[in-house]
Length: 311
Image (cartoon, rainbow, N blue to C red):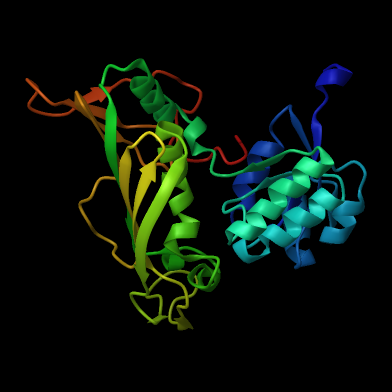
């Protein structure tokens, strides 16, 4: 590999559950060299470093002081995203953050402004829109065969992460909840399809004030819920399209589609925006009784999960 194409030095901050997928891909890529892992829990950082052959496990401050680290991959809890990203930018590092970029608009703007002042790049998950399934949908819409996109319906229903996450309580506190945790997959997809959002109207509520998981790593442990777990919204885009968005932790079984786009000639059924593959289906408005499967137009992500770090 030439000097001009040498891999960028990466430091991973936050070695919780999502870091396994990121590190698996980052250490396998010729474009990235993982220099160090950091976490408040040094034992966790050392375990991940040993698992993926990363030479150094350290504190976040030590990682930011390392001149070999050119880009920080921020995998901390949402409430810490802004603090860690701003510290990385101040240290002269590019930043790629797990979603959300921040838990409020003011902090997100501070991150972007700090990057612009320093001439640094900021990226943020989700990156699933780069997968074969959603890229096929974008191509179908862009080609115009489905007619003019008019509206969309997006629905993220689920029981919540308590059945599998080793520490689900923080996802039910401010900075968590279904909108900030899962909504970015859906909103990113809608923005890629329709462009910027002009205005939003929404309502929200907490479905249950306390939760006690009946299975999973925290089975039997009760914790309080202090952020909305049912959020419904209407988004109006600059082109006039409207989308209905509902995200919830607490309704495990529902028949709503993940995401559908209603066009003047057909309806497009979009695969789960939190995956990379299909299925992609189309139903014509006239002369077609049912859905037709669309062969994915790209093959770079043939599986549904596992491409964290693609962004």
